[in-house]
Length: 225
Length: 215
Image (cartoon, rainbow over all chains, first blue to last red; front, side, top):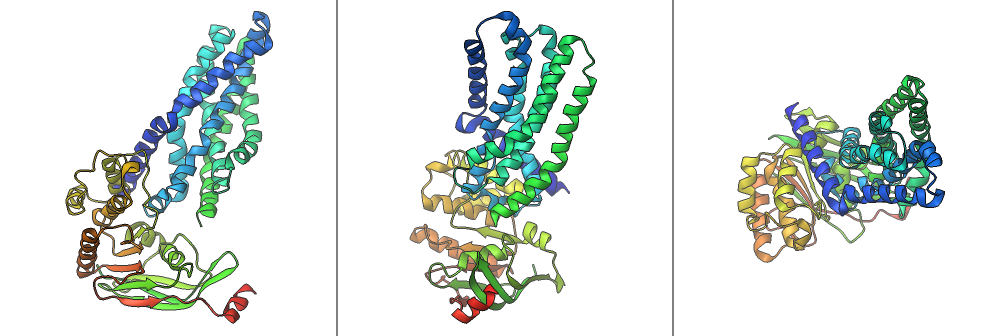
């Protein structure tokens, strides 16, 4: 059992380190997120009333798109470097390896994007009272994005130019968190109870957490044989 | 260690193409097999199948420890080392980081690891990122995991290819020490290994066998 824990810890440390350092790390996704945000008032005009109404919804859209960016690196590098040959000879099953890699990636980029979400929302004109709910919901949402994205990344593994394929596979499944998340923001803004939307958002994250490892394990097994 | 391997009537396919037909061999503790054959005949595929990465088309691969058959999960996670012609290193990580990770992940011993660093002459490379290493240095780094985590079967895919003369001799002696310790080695090679091995030459299956396998 201690072998198991030692290997899991080693994998998390390695992947977290890699997601924070390689290829610009979280800076790439954060830069993309901020750029998208900066383009919104430029394209819609600076009308404060319009912006404050749509700020929360648009932030969710930007979060979903920024979460796509780091997906291609999730399994592709280790696949090309043949690191999976070593990973498969360790004590962890492929499902757990995939889950740990996704969680490390989420800690390395998703959580950082989530931390920026309240700031982005408020800059766009959403009321400051949304900040806390914005942070909580963005954490749940980015976790769903990471897990669903992991399924897409594992399915596209080994196909040339898998990036576009992955975006097409994954984006439809990003719709529910975007709906629930934006709905949650709207409910909070209008003073309605946020419980329902928050429950749906949490349920989707748990659904992805339960289904993700099984799907990723099967897809990786296919890609690696 | 007392682990042995029995391969019976093994056939391997890559896509629709039959690569290996009806292969049988036994491997006992202390024995080594050198696997030869022309390019593309299926040496790497055979090694990957023995490591459990690929499923055989037909036939069985059974491993025994003290006459008790081992489960395939135990086999894959505790008894086999696979060294492919890719070195399985992340280019942006340092030699020391990679050594630590492999030792932790494969259940290796860091005390033994330090000995491995000395034996494989990695001590001057520890702070370098692996992308700066030469092919031979990368191979020596990959070999470190053979020494860090003790496992009975080493599956080596052209282990000597990028190494210089001195390090070929060094790896040869490490392999002999492993065999003397009761280990087993299956190595795909083009030049003979510097010690006694069983030779296993892979041949392409006949046209009839290939057609029969397509049905």
